[in-house]
Amino acid sequence: MSRYNAPFEIHVHGQVALRADVSFEQLQDALKPLWKYAGARSLSDAAGSSYEDEPGIKFDPQEHLLQMCWTVAGDDDFRQALDEMCMNLNELAQSGAAIEVTFYDADFDDEDEDEEDAESESRDDFLMLFVGPDPAAIMQVQRDLLVQDVVSLMERHFDGAELGGVVSEIDKLFGQRFDDLVNSLQLGKPPRGSGGGYGGQGHGGGRKPRHLH
Image (cartoon, rainbow, N blue to C red; front, side, top):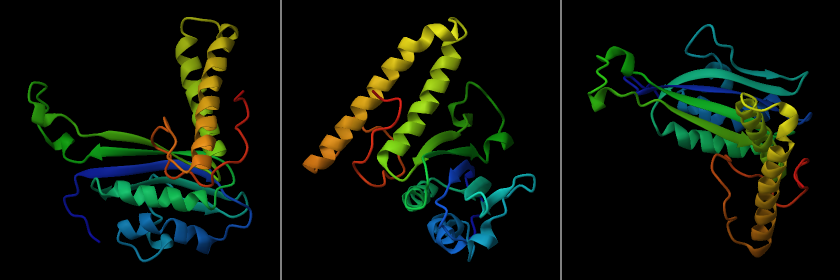
């Protein structure tokens, strides 16, 4: 469908390692929420980004990789397409991966930027979504990104060798979250403190992520 005067330019960015047996047809079906939202009839038709300098959506069958650097015009309803896409990719992913989604206010640059006028404030938004074959793989990516961010921030004030205790505490938090998830699945109720941005959790149970003690 055409989206004239869409309020956002939405950029999807990420790289997902796929199982070796995944075909283009399977990937096209998994990404149908995206290309259908863009008004295309196939993944190939929608693979090009709104900006020529962006690679768009690419499938590397030799490396078994899905690479996305793709912009589309849209509205807040694009979030539903993202949720469906993530659930589909869980079934194809070889390992956990993060997908960044940025909503750019398409009208903001055309407005007079008056800091005192609340109506002129940008409606930009940012999401970090996660996909993976199981909750352990998803939590592993979340853990690694958090450790990277925390260590990068704290290294401004402390030597990296001093931060082992901080990393250990992060591992304890994720270890407890994983245990809560496993226990809740066994009891048939939603996990407490599951956090947001999972994009679907794939299969329950399974192994605990490495580093989480």
